[in-house]
Length: 223
Ligand SMILES: C[S@@+](CC[C@H](N)C(=O)[O-])C[C@H]1O[C@@H](n2cnc3c(N)ncnc32)[C@H](O)[C@@H]1O
Image: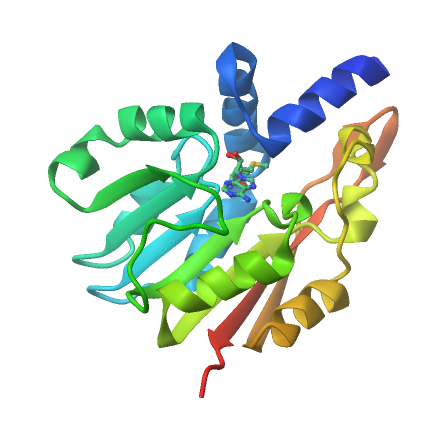
């Protein structure tokens, strides 16, 4: 993997936060490769049942929607992303699912979801926690849309891994496993399981390391 200038890393960081335009399209495709294992492991951890309604925040270009919809019969998927371009790409990639009514995409931020109260069985998000600006607003919005016993699943690479990726010095927030779990618990989600996965080695700026990712599974803990 080639090295970039600091200006280029800054631009890549901005695109990872909110992919837009032609470069955003390229970055979104790269993410599908770089985060493939993470997305597959997260979808497996969702353990989707027949008829479930699933909401994803930050689906990028929607490449993994097919894996969610093929997990069980009669699954309903909604994807929300605050990048208009990612919503458009997701709709292009998933035209067949739009046509048969199994998928819908919305241009919206995580703290203002165009979804009715208590209608979502499972809400999940992969690689977005680093960018959340208002945790309380986002997590209370998640509680609003989740059913009383709904599940929230958050997947991330932990702080000790994220800090090894050069672009993350530009405006990313890092979380250890404990910090991410505490954040969810503090906002009324009960952690039921944390899965940890080692990834194959990658090289950045001449250093080789093994990334890992975490999948935190929780239940809406509303009485
Ligand atoms: C780093 S990319 C991850 C894409 C994909 N989930 C993956 O893991 O490969 C982050 C995605 O989440 C979206 N995103 C980040 N923060 C968001 C927020 N607060 N509300 C809605 N979308 C958000 C971005 O636009 C982008 O498409």
